[in-house]
Image (cartoon, rainbow, N blue to C red; front, side, top):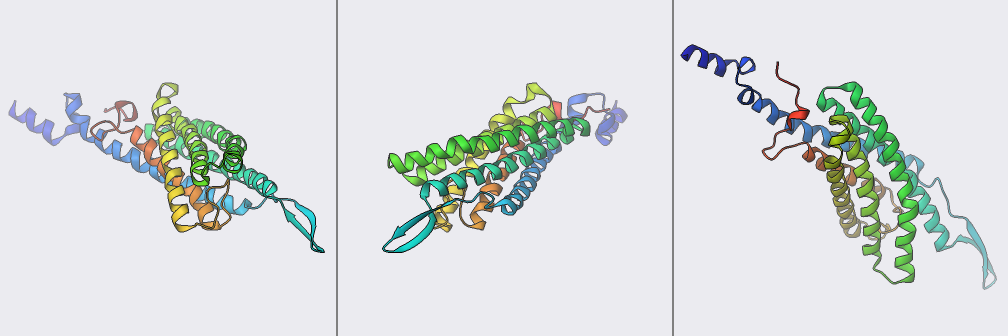
Length: 265
């Protein structure tokens, strides 16, 4: 009996008593899940920021010819500027949603140890995230602008609320892709909910940083007018969403659930 006990302690992979032998591997997998999702969020956010800058200003507000005191001007109206900014925000949001959905879908499959499933989930995330991230701004931002301009709602409050909705639902779509890659449809609700919360937290952080560090960059509007805050608008929600989705794959003791851990041989 003593020889057998030493063998179990010295060679945990060969233990007949399953749970004690695989517990350390599960703990490592939990930390790996969080790290993998963080890196996925960082990569998606950085790529989305670069893509957003490459396409920034794709939609320009048309000028309106006006004459004032004998001087002719051709400047866009505030409404035209907001409409162009909304279209540019939708383009940037589609890129962020598609890249974040792709990255987290791949992460879910890789954490399960099935690259093919990860590719399929990444494809779903690419389509779903791009659709949500590109479609929501057209509906949400005009409503926020109307609240600011017509009903005297505080611009920071209305703008932050709109950004929270867009970032949260976009991240929820990416979280759903992670759940598909990790375990299938049954595993979608938890990472989707975590993604929703993470995206909203990232938007709040961006609003705080924007108001404090870029007060003249119009960070409460659909898209900031300066490069640095535009890039942060992509990076911060993606990072927060990656962290939140990663936490969804970690159990109460910092361990990955059994479904995400390869079976012990």
